[in-house]
Length: 370
Image 1 (cartoon, rainbow, N blue to C red):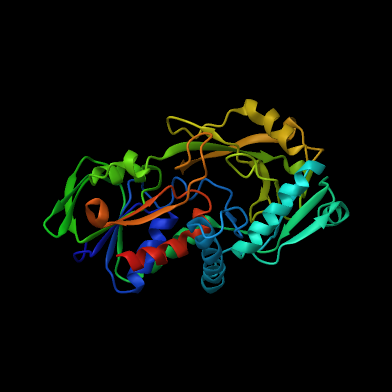
Image 2: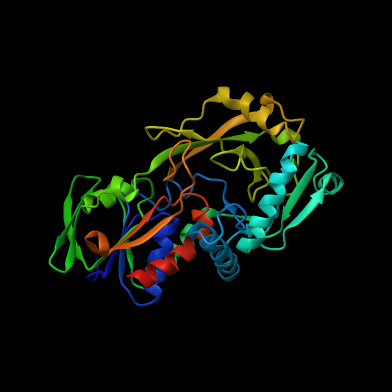
């Protein structure tokens, strides 16, 4: 490192990069410690790449607030830096008459959150907007969209580095302890080289390992409710032979624990289905081809022509959920830890969806806590 950093950000996913850039803009020299060879190799690059409007989250929760604020910051950043994106809009559909009430509740929640000019539409309007979709009603969300995550990651990296901050790749954090008024961070490189760094402040943006980092700092993660649960989501690509499957993002009414298997499209026009939800003990990105039938069955409720033979395994992602299987919905944790005996440490725990959309808003909150 060229100069002694003032802040160490652990993790160079989209949230860590956004924090590093926000700190650097304010003249705070940061070093990002990333165990992989490049940014965003875990949660950030293994998701639907959707810009969420803010429909789904309890009003006044951090998820709702950060999603709506982050959405606007994200669209502005994309325009300013020429990052590939598209405000596609999203249609949430009720496949059965009994789901219409849930759709109406979702509309009320989204409006309370500031999710944009939401519109409830009938079956005829659903067909007009999406000729291949069959549904009894829909909720139109014009503020939803998609973004090229890799371009977004690169823009944050370029910004923070241009302002004098740095990223140390292949650097795993193995120890944290207070050293007077500073934090001593023990790290190990890919080659086994050990290095100790002292900084006044730490931002824990370690994603899947955020609870491990909190524990290294001496925090009782179980008592604080910081233990994360790995939740795997698989994706299947749709055969190009089906052509333009939808005009917009199409989602079912949310299912327990997630948003349901939905249809998204990337900026290259490729369609995919997913993700499903499976709590796992270990990280694996393998996709079981046998799941194609269950994916097709789920999506046929609103896209009747989908068949398992149209689907191919594409990718999987792991989300760090604070919510236990079958447990109540949990909010983001964005907390400065002085009261828990770790002054100068800001923990970002359970940053799952809508973490990508929320990244810039989370970063602004972090800056106020450092």
